[in-house]
Image (cartoon, rainbow, N blue to C red; front, side):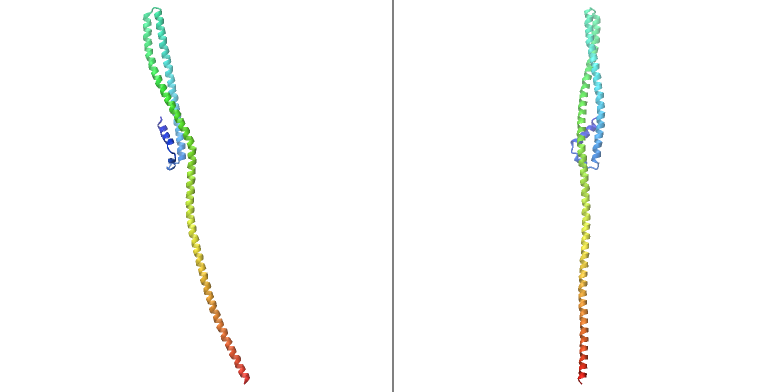
Length: 227
């Protein structure tokens, strides 16, 4: 009867954090423990009620047997007072039989009463444990939800860390591409400047040659005019 009660009591008395590290959902587990214990308490209450009824019945039977013993003794005394000793003897014999039966009923009643008290004490203890479990249940649920939320956040942060690492790599790649582009632009600019200088040099040489030819032509005309 109290096998489940002992198991639940062990769980309540131990640190409930151990449930959080197991594969079972602690919230569902505790809810089920409470339901099971309530069912057990209902069974125990029924058993206690039956035991109390049995105790009351034995008490009533003992009281009736004890009353009959007292009655037989009074009847024996009446028989003696009337001078009927034989009747008094027979009444006393019947009284002794009922006395033995009364003693037996008294013993049974006392044992039943003791068992009733033990069962009622166990029932009170179970109700107290159930009350304690219900008080801890809400706290455990809140702690379980907090643990789940913390785990979810940590997993999200781990994902963000991976995304950030990937983002940093892409940023580094873009920066490298930009550097390569800048280097290419600088090289192209340098090459263009060199080409411009060479082109200017070529243009300058051509103009100088043309200028020299023009001067020679003008000198030739002057010499012809002087003749």
